[in-house]
Image 1 (cartoon, protein in one colour):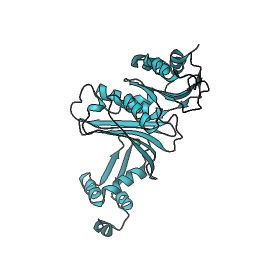
Image 2 (spheres, rainbow, N blue to C red):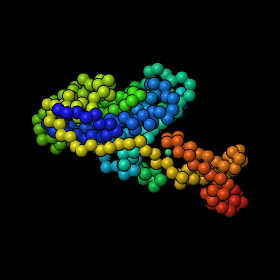
Image 3 (cartoon, rainbow, N blue to C red):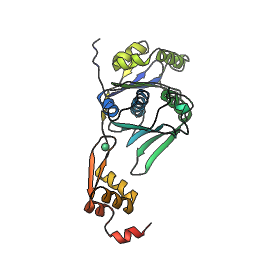
Image 4 (spheres, rainbow, N blue to C red):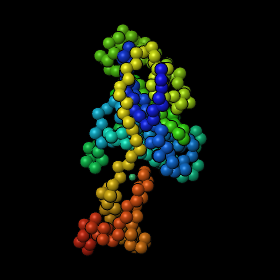
Length: 297
Ligand SMILES: [Zn+2]
């Protein structure tokens, strides 16, 4: 079998005998673009890569309109972690931290940590948000619990990332009718879990998608669907930055203009694109009529 190492790709597949559906995501350049934006300590870089792969994984089996994001906030040295995949397969992400991160970087040990999965359109207010309980140290474990609670279906996830690649594998037991043999095959799910447990992070990172699926599940009649391309991409725009400045209010915008010689420069933290606003732009976006606006609180 000839194998081509394909990167930045999402594969959906079915294990027909077992009645299990799966998604495999392999990120290369898209991940390196995100990883290279900051000087991330290795454990945080790994967690960010896992979250980025997971954000794509979770789009695999839903009809997504807008974007799916995974966001983690905590009161400890790891302050924020954000990963997003859009319905167009555009990925972006970042993390913010200060001071020394705990080792190992266990989710369950982060102080006042909250993780949310958000699906939909932020601007249109059409969003679904679910909270992920952080009872397990690793992201894959936390997401498995999330699926068990929210969809009442067992799921299995394996995530791994290093400086070059971020890879994720997700398996979900199909409800009821999926997989015609599954009714009689009560051992199917434990068997798939067991096969998946034989996979370690190094193998997941080093193996091309089709080869990996063949190696793990060759006795399970894998049906592989057309892969979907993924890429780094940012949804920032001048309009969004204007909305952000508006939300700061006139006083803050004026102060920023005064402090920066009459020009505000906003750099997108995801893609480093720069947006500039002079006094005329600012007046325009704040809605003209300066005196009236400033009295409205
Ligand atoms: Zn951007």
